Image (cartoon, rainbow over all chains, first blue to last red; front, side):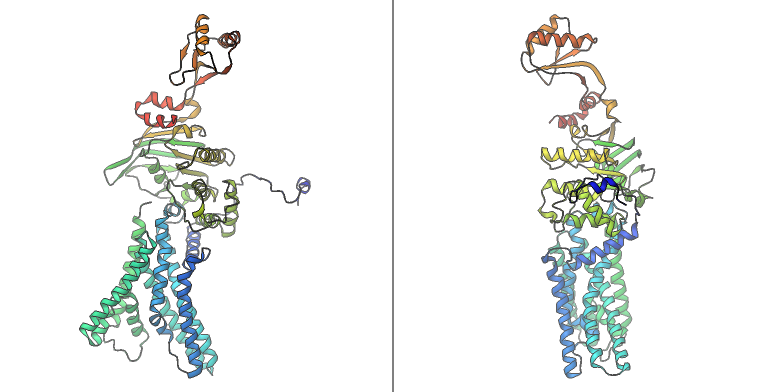
Length: 291
Length: 313
């Protein structure tokens, strides 16, 4: 109920009501971490920021979506799928790399360069929460740019299939694709974020991440060439994060026409070790960073 | 509110930033003064739990920052000395984000960010990117992000750094309002004593990591029993006349035109007024003189000269 005093005040006049103390609810550490995660996902896609921040993430996302659209179109005409769910990340590896190499520095290098970390660490969230939120944000971004085109492929495919059984089969393939996308997201995000967390300058961080992924791929390629055969191929794939996951994929999903030999568990071990070490070092980095 | 017990902080085992500092501070507007490198920033970071003390302990709101850091940090706002802002975000967006980081629900954070930016005088510009702001505006955004969650204690590290005289005055007035009108306890770090003594009710002076003095400012600026007389012209004539009248007149060491007369009785006032009137001199001021805080520090320890010197500039 407005009081008589309030009614008499003319409309449209701003009154300085003075400072208001806040007596409402204060949510703690978990809320702060969740908010930082949401802020991070927005940052990854350049939302709430200038047009310049949107160029790389949306170019990569659009490129992968284009793969999906072409895939659906070809499939509706010929009935065959040029790009399977499980091949999307491999065929679009450069787009994923572009995305991750530009997004990781946006998430963490900027906070180092702008010296924003003291503002975070003087708040309820702990240092490890910061690292977890940023890691999850980057992984979510990678997962999203892979999952979206898979969804397009699935929806497009479901319309051209007859029978519930065929659609169910398609659905399990789609789910397999999502699982792979999640694995790629976590592995790539951990490695890229660790690199970016050590570098203040975004451009340098982008270059080092891209350099790391491409150089390890090149080394792997050279080893494959020198050793030769299936052994050469498998050993060669053990350096670059995307190709390690590719080997793991062939083992988990029992892909036809590949000769993994006994390398399957090795891929799993390397994936786990690489990701675990990267995440551990990332946490250590933020525990040690001085503010 | 803040208690430090033999607080010692060494960096890398060599540089001693704080040396067995023991001090207790009650709420109010507290000036933490000392030369650059005296250990002010270190003390603040220890209070936030950003650093672990080498030995000794500090308690804020009766809590240990190392064990109950989350509870302390939820009730404290911190404005660091260095730049700490992302240039490509609008102030409203950034302060909202920082409000959420302090535990405010999403919608409340947005509302309070607008309110806080209005209080620091950035309402009109709040949707502009911070990168385009002047130094003074950036300092205000830094203050706003420390204030957005309505803390019980504000820790401000050199808030007037890089500001022009008008900007300094504005910032100091704002801090003073936060302490008095908003009812939030404030610790203001500064290497400029003259600046903080204007707005503080308590002063803590540290030097080379040791406590120099901590007291309420009114206890430091006690009445001295000396009258200061200043006339716009004819200082010498007046001095001669007052001496004739039997008063012990001295010249102030720093201000030539200022005559210092011991306040011997109530009649001293009248005598001086009468002399000025008889000589028909333009009286500029006649008041009882108080110690300048900086002089007090200088008297206690010659080593604070640097601080005092800054204060006079």
